[in-house]
Length: 291
Image 1: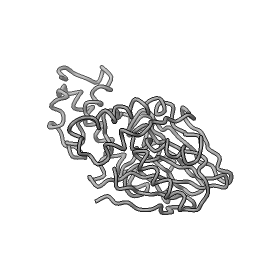
Image 2: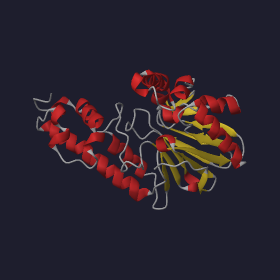
Image 3: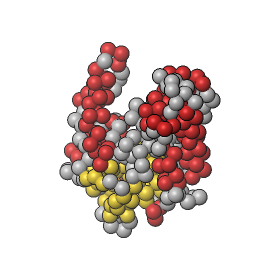
Image 4: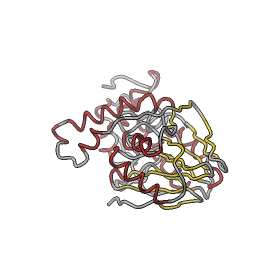
């Protein structure tokens, strides 16, 4: 089962806390200028607990926040950190910043549905004020923490349109968000309704280019992993993409695709990947009938 752990130092002044709710990671990078928090958990209430965990580190004050993408389990704590530390800058890719509020409202609407009436986190998700990033970039940017830099890189569309990785070069750490996932459900990546399965392998190729054989990679969910893990997951996502391409080129209808091939991940986790993949393929790679 997922667990809750206090911040653990995975490299020089890079701490990761793994939380039971969504098995989500919150990371902190320390420098002479202060602390940079990467992702902020899934509600204002949950993030207030994270704030106390950060303070317990005794490593300095928070001077900035990074959202690796727009999903609520990575952004809904932004407001709590602003309450605790003032109007610190919140950094994200421009596409993620633009999508944070509508994506969050969709989730709050889902928690309104009768099927979620008994969810123990319903009230705290609905009560959270959605605070999007106010410092954005399109490709690459660097944040200065005094004695070290943190590089924010948008490797392309993958888990979402606005994914980023945060690289700490002197510590050989990459905070990968949901571009990489190590999970209790068999390390299945988050192929959600806004994923880009045909482009995801290429995005991971760029991420792998940032890694050494000694790199620590912190996924959005689960334990830290290494370059070998990322390469394996990239290859499996690549198989998903090429399988979708093959099925579409042979005219297999999208509604029959999951049952028409062998997949590297359980088929029940791939419905959105297949649907999105068919949508994104150029017309020249499709044959009738597809639906």
